[in-house]
Image (cartoon, rainbow, N blue to C red; front, side):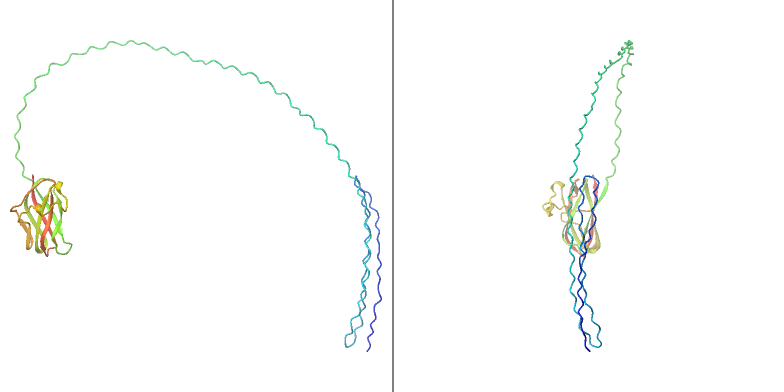
Length: 280
C-alpha cells in the first residue's frame, strides 16, 4: 500500500475595514468627539488536512498549514476637544442690616423703711414691805448629861484554822522548803495537827517573818523558826496533834508570813499542817 500525502492549499485572509459614521455634536459647550477608526478583521489560521486513516499501520501526521496574516488595525480618529465655557462671576454680598439698640429706662426709687415706734414701759409702784414678826421666846437651859451605861461582858475569843498542804505528787515527800502562807490578822497559836495520806514518818518545821522582811531565799530561813525543839512530827503513823507547843513562839501579827520546811520524811506522799489559832 502506498500512502500519498497531499499538502493543503494555502488560505489567505484579507483585512476587512469597517468605517463608522460620524458622531453628532453634543449639546453644550463640549467639543465633538473624533471618529473612531474601524477595527481590522482577524485573519484565519489555515488548518492542514488530515490524511486518510491507513489500514494497519498509522500513517504520518499531515503537515500543518501556514498561519494566516493578521489584519491591520485602522488608525484612531483624533477629534479635538471643544473649549470649556466661562464661569459666571460671584454676586456681591448685601449689607448687614442691624437695627439700633433701645435706650435703657431709669431705675425706680427705693421706698422708705417703715418701722413703727417702740411702746413705752409702764412704771408700776412697788408696795411697802411687810413688818417682820417677833422672834420666839428665849432658849431654855441645857439639860444634864445622863450617866454612862454599864459595859457588857467581853464575848469569847474567835478560834480560826490555818491549813497548809504539802504534796509529793504521788511519790514520797522530799525534804526542803515547800511554800509560804500569809496571815491577815493578829492571833495566837493554840495547837498544831498533822494529817497524812498514809502511814509513815515526817517532821515539818515552821518559820515566820514580817511581810516587810520577806525576801526569799534570804528570809525566811532556819533561824526564823518558831517551833523551837518541838516541830510537828508523825512517827510511823498517819496523824499527830500537839497543844503543849513547848518553847514555841505562838504570837502571830497581821501580815506575818509562815514558811513550811520538811526536815525529814518517809513513805508519806501528802500531809496537811493545821494550826488552830485564837484571833485577838
